[in-house]
Image (cartoon, rainbow, N blue to C red):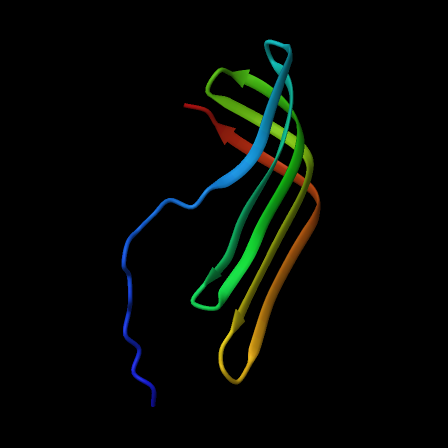
Length: 104
């Protein structure tokens, strides 16, 4: 059996690049959405991306709480290559969503 030895030379933040928007049509009614991507090319043969896009209509009854209904697309793809095999994980979700958000 192969012995696993953890190797960590340094710890660095990994960037998530995206855009978020919020349009206040009234004090209690917002349109908001956003899109973001997180991408890693290769760390010991592992690479992939996480992509998220969402659009919501929000009802804000209190300044600290929002009820939202909208559409979300979420995509995760991870690949790993070792000497003898190549593995790939892919997860996709596209569809309606409902959320209760607490704002602080």
